[in-house]
Structures are given as structure tokens and as C-alpha cells.
Amino acid sequence: MNTNKIIFKNAFIIFAGIAIYFFLMKLLGLENISELRFLNFIFVFWGVNNAIKANIKYNQENLYVNNFSVGAATSIVSVGITILGLLLYVGAFDPNFIEFLETSFFWGSRLSLPLVVFALAIEGIASSVTCSFILMQYYKNYKVQDTVLS
Image (cartoon, rainbow, N blue to C red; front, side):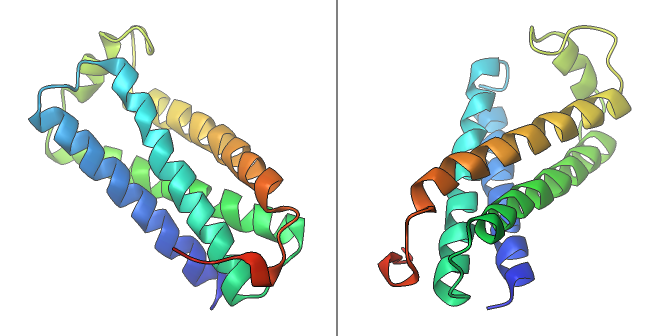
């Protein structure tokens, strides 16, 4: 299977999981509980794990750096798609979302959309590399025949 296909497929799955999760939070009235936003890491972790496993199985890839790159690229692409989704959401559905973020203790005051996008990009890239590194500690000793996709 093409590596780019693995990356983009799992990046879209991560995005879909995060988008559905946040819309469910909004529907249930839980969007004001900032701590729940950290649970989106579960979707990132799952998608990166699935991408690395797929790369090992379908591409017969055992090299640490190559699998790490697939994991990091998957997560970074999902960050980009998520940022585009945020821009679409703020522009089309909830222009007051930035004001809502200003009330949470994570962001502070005097926010602008470009500042939020920049912060999400930096945080997303950092968590992408971290997540890929954590997962590669598990997969670094796996051989191709040991990996089973779920």
C-alpha cells in the first residue's frame, strides 16, 4: 500500500474522530469543560498507531525512522486538516468561538484567529512528534510478521 495513502487515510480518520467528539461535546453542552478537550489525544494516538501498523504490515517496513516518519506525518496532516476545519467552523458556523476561547483559562485574552491557528499548529506538531516517538518505542523491536492489524 502506498505510504501517502496510509498517511492521508489515517489523518482523515483522526480528523473525523476529533470533529465528531467536539460536536458531541457541543450538543451535550460540555464544550465549556476545557479539560475534556485533552481527550482528543486518544484519536491522535489511535490514528498514528494504526498508520505505523499499516506501514509495517503492508509495506514490510522495519526501519525505525521510516515508521516514525509515517506516524509523525499522519499526525501533522491531521493537524492541518483540523485547522482547516476550525477555520471553516469559525467562518461559517460560530464566529464567536474565539471569544469563547478567551474565557477558558488555557488561552487567555486578546485572541485572534491567526494566533489560535498558530498555537494549534505548534501544539499539534509537538504532540505529533511526541506521540510518534512514544509509539515507536513499542514498535522498534517488532518485525513484520509480528504485526496484526485490528
